[in-house]
Image (cartoon, one colour):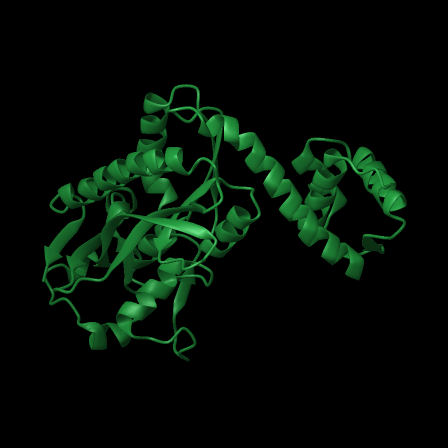
Length: 315
């Protein structure tokens, strides 16, 4: 009988995910030689190679790819067994691995973390900020408990809970304050600053402007909403930002804000987790805390519409 250990499977999964011995060892909090030894022993037990190794690249063999699929399912099931005890408690304790997209994290987390720590004393909160596709992969792989994203996700393996709808605001240079708010046709002819590909907010902005993602025109890109707003303040173009970002991103830039006439562009913010997660009841309670924090952040954005030094107007 082949003798495999959970430790070996976890080390294998980390190496398959990172494709690099050093990064995999760091993620497992062990030395690289120790990881290499465990992988070697695993391959010897199986009697087959799991990885192709050369000086430049590490990749799974054909058997390794099939083995990795089975291992991820096994590890997820083992992790969910460990969650059963936690699920029997009224309040969530222990570790909470929470993913958040970059266009929400900087504005929501300060309020949310404080509220979570107040309502769930002793909760060990681990935050992962990255784009939606990566969060979904990590959710499905069992490396996250839940994620705060823009809906819909439409993944059959995930539960989606809507939290609130948030409007988008047009950001222009301060010298444009008081000018008519452009409609979609006019906006398409302006120099529109967008987040780089991979951000769902980019796709939402393009959808509102009715511009295809591959439209061959000059679209300037940035890696964060902060960069986009500063570019607008420098007179480079215009951009859209979500309402909760207004207090943070516009406080030090010479920009003006304008709201579009109804129907205003907006996004739906929600929380998602695996349908099989035993902590579903507790995560529903966490979603309520997230909703209150998000409503407070959006309310703060609304309250700053007339605050200096940023000029603001409404269509």
